[in-house]
Length: 263
Image 1: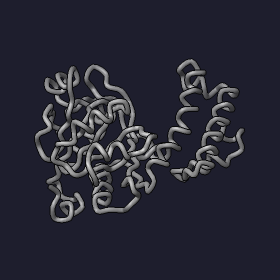
Image 2: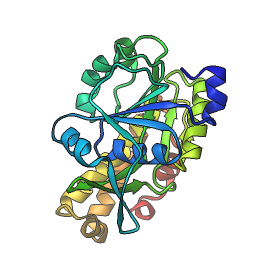
Image 3: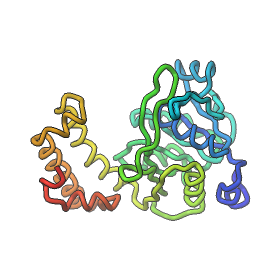
């Protein structure tokens, strides 16, 4: 698969992609890649599989509902150029074990994973893993995807080789994301990036909890915001003291702002 230097760095459309997991995140990327002209299949099970088989991958855009060109499958016996794994962290290792025999040398784990990639690589075999994190969110209501990409200033789709190298397949991913109009960012230290992400989002989740589940309510509560700011900066300081690079670069800004400004 993907001969001729990754089929001209995926500029050609003869590229087969599998989205393993068709919840909100997987569905967003499937819709984007299919709209860009790539040959996309989505892998699902249970009620989601039944829903997709009956109606296809439906998504809402500008108030109207459309059907994506992505195909639906419950089989893993074909060869793919890239597989995107979009499951929850607690499902990750089982998903990788299921994907281990699949004919694909480029498996992109788009999962919140602060524990590193050694076990993932051990399951898949040497050289197959690409580390990533999605930049999307939303809901699926009555079988219709109501979601989209996260604004670039908040969260781009971030990815990189586990060892930080800049490879041909990373160049190919960059071109695929560009063609699909997905904001992206290459990262040379994805484990550090994941740890910093966790250091930020856990205090924010705590703040929303204290805001009775409403982010606007939390944002209006100065005491809650001051506590969140303190916890974010404490977490980033601990990570930096442990030798973790603060990534992406805006994390360094969050770490250095006066606490009241960050709040």
